[in-house]
Image (tube, rainbow, N blue to C red; front, top):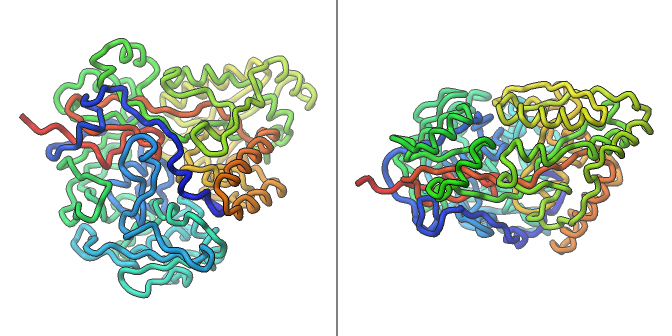
Length: 555
């Protein structure tokens, strides 16, 4: 989330398909409509890395976070292309720009409140944004320090200092003064970092365990790595919220479950599991059974996304500092084998470029088709005819292990000796985002913060974005001509021309092979027979939009 004037929000309506396999009116069909009452269960095979809005920069946690806190703007709650559209949330509109889009003013809706009934004020938004500058909370988006005047030197509010470029002339007005034009800053403020945080609730890193609610639910209990229980925030007013439905009485999220067990429970759908949704896609072992059973297939929701999965190659470490070694790896990788570990075609399409087909600027090309002979020739030309040793960072989850082993096997055939370094799933992104802890190759992925290449390419490939902690440029790719081109594209007023330019730049970058795309994601999840209004949301890598689903009324 970086240096640029983002592609105009008109591009947010790019044709994306996010549909349920269910026929209209089935249990997962959007047309069924959410109904109130009872407890919704969410069965998750992964952890929630961070719920603190200053540190919440992973799509899974953002899907959950939207239940707890609100932001100035947000994704609309809808399937298909409409789901990618940004709409007002706490703010009355998408912001009013002046000074050539360097100053942005937002007005808060009247009647918005925290969970204790106190009004949400502009000072709470300001404080929430300021927290993202604190060195103690490094994992969140870098937009503040990149765009806000004085952001490069500001160290956050934890020692009492304020950022002068965020002004609050009254309790309902907040003004952001930027150091450059940002055409769609109104989309940027949909990120969790723009959620309100009361200063008197500050708890530093411990705020992660109990963010103060401004959304329809508040945290009743949280056992890290095990369970989150959400109950109604009685001070949330649905009349002020056009997106969230707040339909279930309670939402219980079980974390770090065995994926096979989640599949079994969702297939059986007995007892409370009839009121459950699967958070992560069905495992590869269950795909055939689900697709072969009409009743199960009727409860399957498939969401497409703008996410690309890829390997980040550490260009700052030998031997991957040699472009020929990186190109050899790109030719050697068996992408189909990787897709198979995720369930085959139902998991998405094999990726050939970093920008997927649903992202403006995508170009239909394949610079590194599978070619084992060419991979070996490139390695030999780089002086590694005897092969090379690499360490692969992978999440210590069943899915992560399967992917890592597929990578190890396919690269091994070309002469890469791959050692797998397993990292706890709950700390994976924080670990690989710390320069001192990252190794040679990272199993990686990226979803733009809102649809467009401007929140994709610069985030992961602009060398000026490399930081010691919270680093997203895990390829450590830093080329002056590419960085300069990012700035030139950011200044383009025509979004269509900017999208084309990003596509051309992506081609230029891929010649250096700092990343190896392997999958354009889809998410296939099962929902219980009592669940209504379920659809995959593009903003959350096709996961079910938790903010809008409900349960059938009890008989």
